[in-house]
Image (cartoon, rainbow, N blue to C red):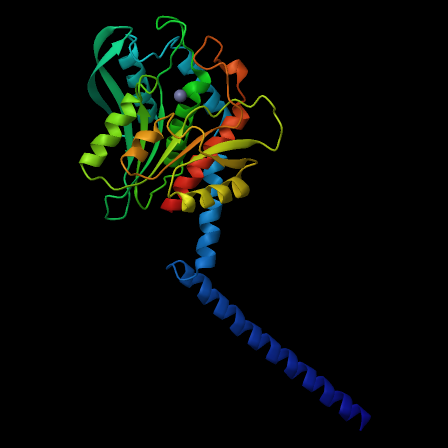
Length: 334
Ligand SMILES: [Zn+2]
């Protein structure tokens, strides 16, 4: 009896194990189906994991070496003053950077201006440089990443104006985000336009011309992202802070920026309104467009002098701030 009892017990255990195996197999099947369904966009959780890892991969590709080289190359123009004779050469150099990154639709968006400078009226052509990444959604909705490429020396218009922080650093943000988006074959939901603005140091002429033109054409700009002076970090502490100039009505974007900083960088954003009207985002704000503007936490007193050179900058810090612009565009467009 005891033997029979043991056998029965063994049989029960065997049945129980078989039952467990069958039920776990069904469980695996259910999960498999769920996983496959997620490729059709059903599982938001799985989509989120894909989106998160793609954003991480793209932002990791933003290279300090490339950022450094862009700033050195721009400094080597000696001056990028808006009225200097080399202004078209610089615009063509920027155009070629986009072309080398894989953009085939780059244009010099030229405009004619009369500028009064020290009582003399100067008539010049100026050149914004514009590259586009077409959106896959059937809409005219557009995101803009911009920065100015001109520089200035307040002592004299004819002196060297290296403009490494102001604003080769911002141009590095535009060029480097554009480069890594092509490298990762990003196909954005909406149109993304990369713009290098002319003549910011003379009344924000390039961005004013561009923002007014978009407004006249009723272009639907969802957000303009501006970088101006993002590489000065004299404290060199690891709890790096940077400023987010916050225009009215941008709460949703500020929240995303805080998440990107937390998830993908070592940065701490500090929202402020101290420089709202000081850079190329302002003309977009004046046209009623949403805008955010990133700049370094500590003001750089070397700007507009001979001493705004790369030796006084922190390229690792600059690279981290560039990730914010890339991350914000990806969050909105994947
Ligand atoms: Zn500037």
